[in-house]
Length: 350
Image: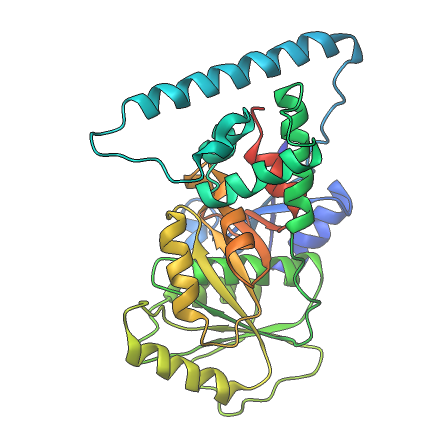
């Protein structure tokens, strides 16, 4: 994947250069303001620097190595199972396995748990695999893995189509709400040629996201701190940034609920930090469930390789995953969530 740098006087001109050079498949990786080098840069207006590339398509694997690939998969699976068993033998005194540990007699069970899936859901998947196979273990780990992926895919909930142009990002502090907003807005403005504006609103605490204002300036997107009117153009996307609210802050959650009611019809996205443990994420979802949440956006996915944790949100809540975000670069890695995307990352080494 070759990354190219484009410098122009505005974001729109940079996008025109990108499309002319790299074509419609180009992906924007980062955008920032830059000045000319030397003394002359002090007297000239700043330019926009955009990093972009064309994603490299995966090359098909040669078919003549199919037998070796199968053996590698089996060896990797056995190695992972042995590691899990060693870890279980090293459990502290007093540790008692759950009553449903009989489900672990399939080799896929420890693999599912190691990928981040909670034991409850891992055993449910194993029970379904047994039912498919007539209560008899399958012939290979790869077959069990294929069945598990099929079962998980059937459990996937697709988010409903977006019905409003107003997008509100809510969540606890540190979840990456503002970064997710900036990534979505940048893709909409640069790649989809959409008109947008931003409301950077205060809650019970001040909204200190100065980086959001800077990024809006780069894109030429108007940003308002205290909008005089709650109305926007029908074709214009409105992105609303609000301060994070702790799950233990009952007053803050009630105030946030009133703010959302005042704004009116909108797509409300709950943003969660993907590096947190599933127990924390599920507790956060429960705390924010009083709000009219439409879907979930998971961020910080570059900080944890156990993407199987995301299935706990799919299986343990009534919400669908809308988008997945990794890294701080804007727009960087911001993609539509899908079952295939989760499974590809979850079993990348399998």
